[in-house]
Amino acid sequence: MPIATMLDYDFMRSAFAAGLVVALVAGAVGYFLVLRHLAFAGHALSHVGFAGATGAFLLGLTPFWGLLALTLAASTAMGLIGERLRGRDIAVGVILSLSLGLGVLFLHLYTAYAAEATALLFGNVLAVSDANLRALAALAVVSLLGLAAISRPLIFATLEPELAEAKGLSLRLVSVLFLLIVGIAVAEAAQVVGVLLVFALMVSPAAAAQRLTTRLKTGVALAVLLALAETWAGIVLAYITDAPPTFWITLLSSGAYLVALLVPQRLEAASTRP
Amino acid sequence: MSAIELTKLTLRRSGRTVLSGVDAVIDEGEFIGVFGPNGAGKTTLLQALLGLLRPESGAISIFGQPPLHGNPLAGYMPQRRAAMAELRLTGWDVVASALDGHRWGLPILGAEGRRQVAWALETVEAVEFARRPIQHLSGGEMQRLLLAQALLGKPRLLLLDEPLISLDPRYQQAVVDLVKRVQQALHITVLFTAHELNPLLGAMDRVLYLGGGRAKLGTVEDVVNSAALSQLYGAPIEVLRVGGRIIVVAAHGEVEAHAHRHDA
Image (cartoon, rainbow over all chains, first blue to last red; front, side):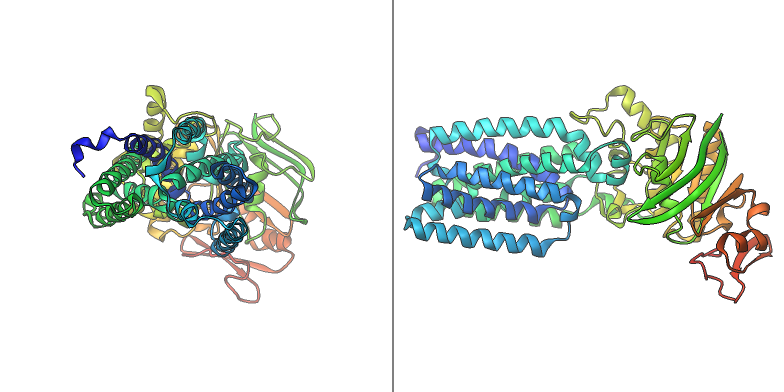
């Protein structure tokens, strides 16, 4: 299809708008997720969301709200576990697989359309409705304001937990608040790339950004820009090629991470130990 | 005024009495080396001073006040964590994270905040490598950054938890010398916990030895001798002085009987 007429379509304009909103949230929140070594926990949260979304189908509710509700519940639980979450890959993985299993059961009971399941698992940014878009935007505002409000103690607690605690900061409170924001971000990202692939928007851009800069604020900005560029380019490529946008987004985000790994580390070369 | 007063202090941790009925008075401006075997209560004592652990009984007074969680008068340097060495962020960003880091909001420093970070980095002589990623710093450089962090807010008391742990001997002396210079320049009180006595010999005013739930505070001559340490540990200890170094030996011959490494 000719690129020139791309924006004549409502669904394309909605897709770009949704991509913008989600990339802002996923990039920024993802940066801190990676900094806190919680990438896998974030991945698992989205799977819990899958059970929530399919459960909502079953109850006749909007899947997105089911996904969000269960993601936030799991966020709170993980936040309360707090620092001990690190290194609990097995426990997180078990909950992840149980959630997907429940999701499959709910789908079975609902005798659902494969299309709905596929959209949940792999996302469908080309089918974002106006109501959906408004919900995404509102939640994005909430999560970004929340992130701004906790960013200073979040950075302190992430880099220097013992010192932060000594200074009177509640590590658990920071952990719960941050994971609630992660829960929102995961629910948003799942709308674009699906619950299975939120890694592509939340982790890869942030990890690439952390390879490319050693400054914190630059890193957050870069993670957002990468997530946005990958999402928008993915939508354009899907428009041109007819392959799903999720495929292109995952390809671009993996590619960007690979390139970031290969970029020569100027600082490493320039700073051999005295 | 004394910097720290411990009165019949008893500290319990996870159901175990770590210190029992300890009395000690540390004057303002003193450099105190805190020693003792693993589990003797060095870190526990620091946590009580920081207000993170309530005394079971007895009292702690810091500049005349009870310990306060988040006390601005006390700068704290936690034990270094291995995970920290993996960070790709610059030393500047990590040090700056501690400036008002407990307050909500965006981490915007402002001109005054940047001045304070720059002051702390200059004080610990870390300006030249503060823009490099943490990942590429040596253990000694890393400790200087953590010391800079502890100095933010200009505390009057520095609580340093094992700054020498996992450092090469050649860096150990440099860290001790730096802390001594900072302490004298800023006229602050220092509690420096360590396993090894010797790197601190030239810097300490007095030592605080912990062991068997008790504590002994005094000059190196008064405390680090066979009679005093044998009494503290309730076991025969010999203290040897060899070429300006001090070696603590359990009487039955094991140099490291108390998990000390008094010699590098």
